[in-house]
Image 1 (cartoon, rainbow, N blue to C red):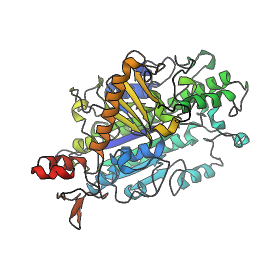
Image 2: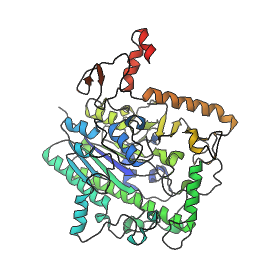
Image 3: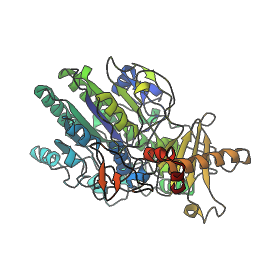
Image 4: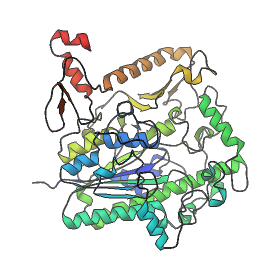
Length: 511
C-alpha cells in the first residue's frame, strides 16, 4: 500500500505577491522561495478570501467562504462544529501540528493539533513556550516596536533592525519547533499534517540585522504606483495616504514621509528575506529527515500588503487593491507535480482543503466550498472557476479574467459619492491599478456584468441551514436532526441545492 503523503502547509502573514525574486522584483532576495517555485507549481492568480488575518485563516483551514463561516474580524468565539483540515487529517491517522502565528477563533485549531506551539500572542493560551525560551536566555520579546516608542500609534511601521538575532525571533523559533515535530514523525513512521504560520513579513518591520543588512536603502526601487494623483481612488485609501504623509507614526530620523517610507520598505524586504530563510530551514529539515519525496509542501500567505504601492505602507484598506487581494501560492511534491509549471488559472484559498484531501486519498470535507486543483498541479490546463472573490462584510473584490471589480455597499461612501462608488481595473493595460474605470461610460457594461456575476456567486455559494423540501444525505460527515440533514457545522452545501433542481418540478417552487 502506498505511503500516505505528509503535508507541510506554510503560511506567512502579509506577503505581497509581487515581492518575490522569481516574479521579477528588482530588489528582494528570496532564494528559497524561488527554488520552491522552480521545483513545484506556482499560481500567479491566486486570490485570498479575506484581506485580514483571522477571516482569511478560517477560510484556509476550513475551506469555507467568509460569507459562510461568518468571520470578518480578528479572533472570535469558537465556530462550533466547523471542522478544520487538521482535524480531518487527524481523524484519518495523521499527526497534526500548528506552529507559529495561528490567529484563529478560540480553541478551534488548538483542539485539532497534537502539537501546538504559538510564537505570537494571538490565541487563547498565548505563547508560553516561546516566552519561556526567551526568559531562559535572559531576553525580552523584540519583534514589536521599540519600547521607547510604544506610546506612538503604528510606530512599528518605521523600519529598523531588530535587537534580537533571527534564532531568537518568533519565526526562527517556530521554524525549529516545526522541524523537530517533523523529525519526530519520521522517527515514529507516522504521516503528518503540519501547519507552520510565520509572523512575518507583517509589521513591525524589524527583521534580524543580517536580513536588514541585505538591502541598501539608497538603492531601493519604489513601485511604479508609489506617487500619482489617486484620482478616482477609494476615499478610504486616500484618507490612509493622508495619514501616512502627515507622519505621526514616524519615530526615526530623518522624520520625513519620503525617508520613512524607504525605511519601511527596507524593513519589509528584510522581513520577506527572513521568512524566505525560515522556509529554507523547513525544506532542509524535510530533506535531513528523509521526507522530501513524501511531503506535499504548500507556501502562501493570508493576504497581501501595499508595500508602498499607492502611497500606502501597510495593508489597509484591504479590499481596494490587487496588492492585497492577490497572493503568492506555490505547491511542491517531487516527482508528482510538474516542476517549474506556472498555472495561470484563477484559484482561491478555499481550494487547499479539497486538493490536499484528493492528493492524500481522503474523503473531501463536505463543509468545504473549495475545488480540487490537482490537475493544475500535474501541469494540465483547464479553468477551475470563473471568479476569484475577496470579501469584507460590506464590500467585495471580484477578479474575472483581466478585470478586477470592487463592489461597495452604497452607504459606505454616501457622503463623498451620493450617486454611488465602485472600482474597476483592467489589469492587462493597468497592472498597477492607477486608473479606476468604474466612472467611465465605456466600461458601464463591464461594471454591470461583474456586479451580476457577484450576485450570482453569492446566491450560488451560500450555505443554508434548512431548505424545503428536506435534503437527506448520508455518510460520516452528515448529521440528521428533526427531519433535516446537515454537515457538522449545521449547514448544507450548495451542491445539494443543485440536486433539488433536478428532482420533480415542484421542488423549484421553494428555491
